[in-house]
Image (cartoon, rainbow, N blue to C red; front, side, top):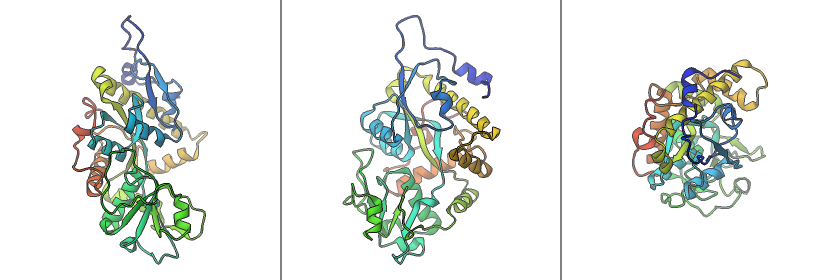
Length: 335
């Protein structure tokens, strides 16, 4: 395990103890990933603060609890959920730390008996969505269908199988919630829907990915556009950021140090999990598989500008947000 860099060491020295009453621990809900392990096992600390890691399985349940009830001080959050929450005035703000990323060409499926042979054939059909319309994977998949394959998204009826994390959200007219609560596998196998987007797991030879060789199609998308899609970010309560202005920077440096430790683990080539192997494959194409920050990080800026544009185009948010709108003061120039 690598040692701390001088800068990171300074960022995680205790700074919040003044000899008065003990500072209560911060509650934090994040998933179990290679880059979060050094935080959860105590190797890396955040500004000398005590943290209480809340285990929530699956982690998407924590995102809903944060968007609806502000249950945690710090929380992992799917980025489209964050955009939607921001649009509805939820008092949370992100820092430029991105915990999960992926390409989403794999996330579009169809029934081979439906007559669909290409993306444009989805027009005029009902396409199911795993979970809500505002799920980040669904947003990226729809954006790819539109920008890369010329699909008119307004000519499709989108059928979510769950409600939205942000309860106040009002979907556009071509979103039909009548299939909420119905397993997406049942919708597919019954023939009620000919296609779906999202993490669709149906054990049937009739259900196939619509985009052939999706992995390499995603890599080609990156080489063409420079966009390395962001899935999950990190948000903090606004009240906490106001009370502790340096917390956002301390969080950034701590996650950055944890990421360095994780990358060293990948370099070692030892005890690699399937997720580690995926990160290594991504690294060969995009470089750092988990780049943080915005300043001088072109892949992050392009990904953020793209996801914001997709969210506007798909009527998830009413207007574009700037980087200053989305990220905590003092974090935009961190590298």
